[in-house]
Amino acid sequence: GAGVSQSPSNKVTEKGKDVELRCDPISGHTALYWYRQSLGQGLEFLIYFQGNSAPDKSGLPSDRFSAERTGGSVSTLTIQRTQQEDSAVYLCASRGRGPGTDTQYFGPGTRLTVL
Amino acid sequence: AQSVAQPEDQVNVAEGNPLTVKCTYSVSGNPYLFWYVQYPNRGLQFLLKYITGDNLVKGSYGFEAEFNKSQTSFHLKKPSALVSDSALYFCAVRDDVSSASKIIFGSGTRLSIRP
Image (tube, rainbow over all chains, first blue to last red; front, side, top):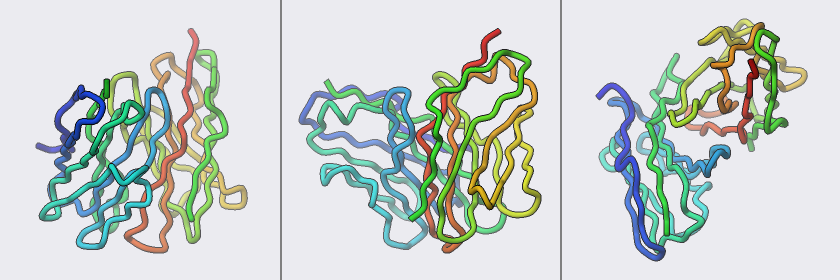
């Protein structure tokens, strides 16, 4: 597709279970970001991938959170042993590289609800 | 480290009046500045950006923003507000020190336009 896609769109899970959230960036985009947005709140930076460089994990809130980006394309955000405070919308964005490619393009998000 | 601040959680304006949504930033080098909008139950959409050049940047839906280096600000403006402008607005920044630097978002400002 032409835009960033994320799956699933909604995920309901029980406290303590692991979840995986997927992001398909725009083809050819070298940068990929994960953010978290709690209800009506701002965007909390989680992790950033840029090409083959080591990811910037400075925003991950705990060691229960991890992310991978395979082949420089698809990314998976994994939350282990989910807690109720993990409930939020998880947004993925991608960005190209080079002049005129500073704009981030966001996916629709995955709404995670931890019961 | 780079940072961005949106000092107002909410801005209320009457339809037809001018609106301003404030943003200030802090970066190591020169800033790349962005505004995004999030309509209810919809994803984040790019509005406009400042990279270099003219300090007054024009974007989508009649919005514009003025880059002020001395005040480290990038306030979003519109001459005449519409009810349909009611949404959550995010300012974002990254520096030009490295092509790998990440984009940081402000906490968001909820704009409410009353008829």
